[in-house]
Length: 338
Ligand SMILES: [Zn+2]
Image (tube, rainbow, N blue to C red):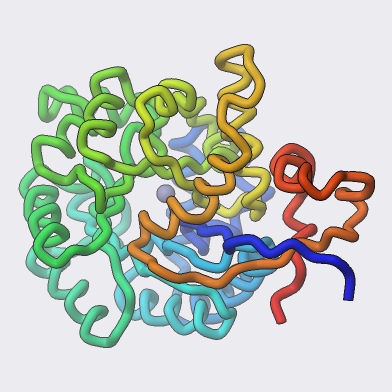
């Protein structure tokens, strides 16, 4: 048994696990052409397929050091239960972020009313599933749904996760419909706060960032997916200045590597500022673990062991190991779970 370093497990605060199947496909076009391919993959999902394929991907996540996952789930209730079973079989802590979808997308994503949506959430909770509420986006949920879901999350003390400001088109549509930007609409509908995580926030402007900071809202960045989809760059330095809590997600699972997500976060910040070490190693490792756990409402999640005998750590002094992990290692330094 070689020398190892024990760390808190990484927390994947945002996964659409079925999208793992899309890697290497759907090249070309833009986000919206990718979305057509994604919708076709979503359409063919069944509880049986979710049960089998999610277990495989959750095992990959676990092997990469993610010991807890927030599954942002919009494929239907039977598939939600299948995802819960798959995570248990793979040995990852799962929080099922059950998605509210009022309009657009596929018929299978949608509930006929916000009451019907909350009834589904109640069903999951009654079955003992750890859940969060997740209005998909301001694109998919009108403001009365957002307000109702915001009230429910506050009353029930549940995490609330929502996509916002991933693509400029979403912002233009929100301005046209509501006369304000997506994160401003989330503020007006009382969906922001310490229990809330906004996923992406790539194109958030200064006043939206101020709103996130003032309400204690967390941002979940998914840099490898955001790069793959041509979303843009997280305003990393501007978030840091405002001390907005950050966590990470594997999102489309085009890559499964928490160290790479963290390295990308810091890399984006360096490219934007011309400085090195915009985030400290401790901050980055906290984004990858504790902040994600808090975003999912988890108090405890399994730790991991890093193989100090791994070739990519050869010659690195013990004190420099955390920095070397973030700067130059892949997830293969994580020991296999026993
Ligand atoms: Zn997403």
